[in-house]
Structures are given as structure tokens and as C-alpha cells.
Image (cartoon, rainbow, N blue to C red; front, top):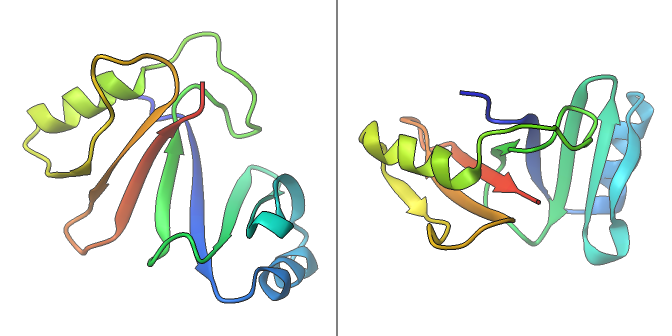
Length: 123
């Protein structure tokens, strides 16, 4: 099952300091708004999201419907289908997307070590 674009979402203490650090490693901002305490940085195929005051922990993020350049895919597995599959596999969901809705939606789960995983569809 293709989960879409992959990134690491980092819970940062000071978004400006973190952004400057990752820019020194060659990352450039491709999205978000530092004034709103979030931004998305990319270096080649690698994507990092910086979020100040939004999440308690760092998390793995997958975006159904997007490729690694945040471009829309022609076909993709909808977040509701991914959620249904995860539930059928016996995985515990921490939050759920409304299965009666369509379009954007997200749900969360954790891996066995407590690492949060966000499946976040933007379209």
C-alpha cells in the first residue's frame, strides 16, 4: 500500500533556530509559515516539517495523494481506505478520520515503541 510522501515532523523549541540549522545542511523552505510556527523544508527527496508548540513528540508523517515533491498524484489510496486497512490489521488508532467524509483528513497511530505516525491527506 502506497502511503504517499514521507517526512519527519519535528517538535521544535525555537522554529527560527531550527530552520537556520537545517538550512545550513542544505534544506530549503518549500512550504509553511514561520510566523505561524510551522514550515516544511526539503533537501533533494528528503522532507522535514518543523512545528513549534503543535506536537508533543517528533512523528513520522505520510501524505496520501502527494509525491515527495508535494505534487498531486493522479491516483492514490484514500486516507479512509488506509485507516480501514490499519484497523483490519488490528492496529490501534489514536485518532480517526470520519469514514463518511471525503477529501482532506487524517488519523494517527503509534508504532510498538510509542513513535507517533500521522497519515495526513491534504486533498
